[in-house]
Image (cartoon, rainbow, N blue to C red; front, top):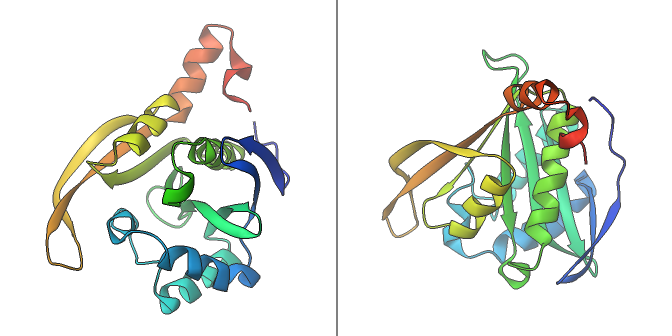
Amino acid sequence: MSEQRSYPRHVKTDAGDIEIRLMSPADEAAVLAFGKGLPTHDLLFLPRNISEPKVLSAWVKEIERGAITSLLAVRDGKVVGCGTLVRDPHSWSPHVGEIRMVISPEVRGQGVGKALSQETFALALGAGLEKLSVQMTVDQQAAIALFESLGFKAEALLRDHVRDVDGKTHDIVVLGHNIAQVQAQMEAYGLPGAVQH
C-alpha cells in the first residue's frame, strides 16, 4: 500500500488541463497570489491565513522539514488549488493526517477539487496513515459532499471556532476517515485493491 506517487500528474477537468505537482519553495510567490485571490471566507477553514507572506514563509519551511506535503493544481501556469497533508510523527497521533484543501472560485464545480482531493488522499495512503481528518465551515456544502464521497464522515462540530476579519464567528465541521478500518472491511470482502488509485 505504500507505493510512492510520482509528480507532476496531468488531469483533464471541465476547467481544462490541470497539472498537479508538489509545492516547492520556488512556488511561494505563486501560492501567495493564489491566497490573496481567495474570498476571505474560504481562508477560514485553513488554520492560518495563507494570504499573509509570513505564513507562506513558515509553510515553505514546514515543507522543507518534511512535516507537510502540499500539492498544487496549476492551470496555464497559475495556481488554482492547493491540497496539503499535515502529520506530526512526534505527537500522540502519528497515525493521523490532516488534509487541508482550498480551490479557486473560478474552477469550482469543474472537477479540480475532486482530482486534488483524490491525489491528497492517495498521498495519505502512500504515507501509511491510518486515519485522516479534514475541517471546513459548515456552509461549505460542496467541499463536505466531496469529502463524503471519499468516505469521510462528520465527527465533530466546533461552534464559533473561527473568527473572520469582521469579528463574526463561524462553526467548523470536522470530518474523519478511518482508513485502517475501511481497508480491513474491504479485505474481509475480498476487495483489497478498491482503495488504490
